[in-house]
Length: 404
Image (cartoon, rainbow, N blue to C red; front, side, top):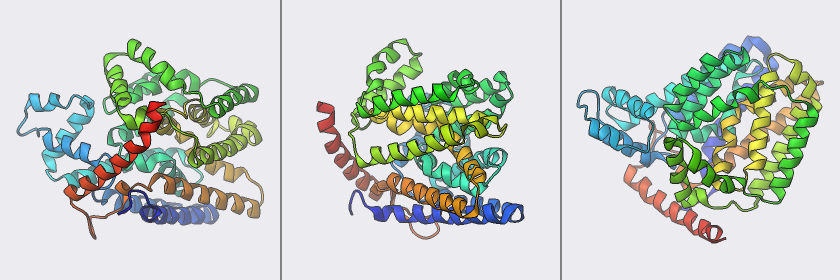
């Protein structure tokens, strides 16, 4: 089988297309269909992602953690602390679930159900225009990768989404506690705590576009800011953060320098267009609306992290996706603000194609060749063989860049 193929993307594209159809019904039928659309959206997520087989690039690492950790009934502190690369909150979470569900496939289903519940709580509060559209946006903007591959990050990210309500109200204590809880699953949640004052800051359009202009310079001159800062971060960070940075920088896949490609130019054009809509054409309306004002700042953080840290593999794949919720909330509100049914439909069609293209680009690797537990699935040993071949291909691609 080919290590990279658009055939692997078909199931993900079809699932996203179903969500977009539901979003169209929700947007144009109004409140009458909102509850039904919400239920069908959640059901589709459970069936597609909850019942997936051995899919993804990190399935083997998480399967090994699940296998090696003890249960509450045969507790062994040595085995528990031996998994030193994983946060203590996540390990205890796995121990609790393993104590009830000894099979990894069942653990994977229950874990996904937990993520879906958190996502549902967030979307029900903030996705006031279209629940299905916001769900599709989340999956397209790396949410699919979080749910399939980044089981620890996903908890931290969703807890951050849940903490936004406290930041909006200026309740720093509750915001802090929620993200400290998230850091027990993944240390990246500590970044959200530092983000608090910036999210509440009022920024003028002029300031935003000055930052944007600087970002364009960094992008087109391919300035690798992250690798210039990483040594300083390692020296001054708390030990657990430093350890994570060292692990990532020792991984050829993440430490390599990213090349200018169709994908990076595609992302630039897409983000530039969103920047124009959100931070120029509809900026004043979005900043004065209580439902959207806070998310404009979150979107600006997302855009700046994309432009300033695009050329390091680790930051381009991990950093912008932490702040995607601004787009998830704002893009449906843009559709609401656009006048005229024909123009609104045209924009909806454009965003639909944009989301389908996004998820296509994220699922071309053979590790994402979809299987469902209800129909057929490949054994873990077979998947491991396939994964090893794909890793060899990626390392062969990364070596020339590493030498530079």
